[in-house]
Length: 118
Image (cartoon, rainbow, N blue to C red; front, side):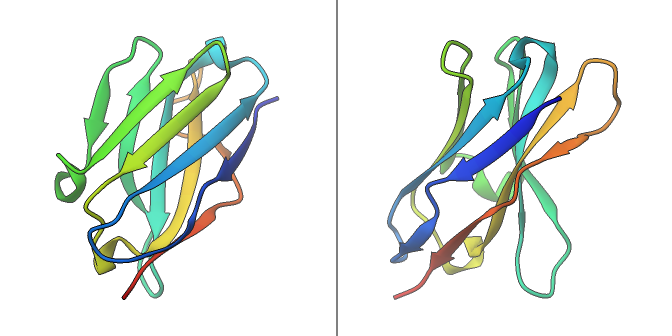
């Protein structure tokens, strides 16, 4: 069983930074990938970034160059560093994980709110 708990959300001004953390309990070495998704009010949940077990990263086009995903296997943590934040980044951010035996992200955290506003 894998449990994900996000932290680090909050209110920040445009141009500011936030660092989200995802604490992974369970067998992190059995996870093929960990990702971050977000859902803004009235919109569908969208993928933001992901990192594989080998450390390969991918980013949604609108966050490339601003967001950085990283993982610390020793601490069972996956972080999302968000810089140059924009009002359109406002959303609930979710951490998700995919087991090696599964084709989709089957584990989800409860989400953390990020609000970018002056």
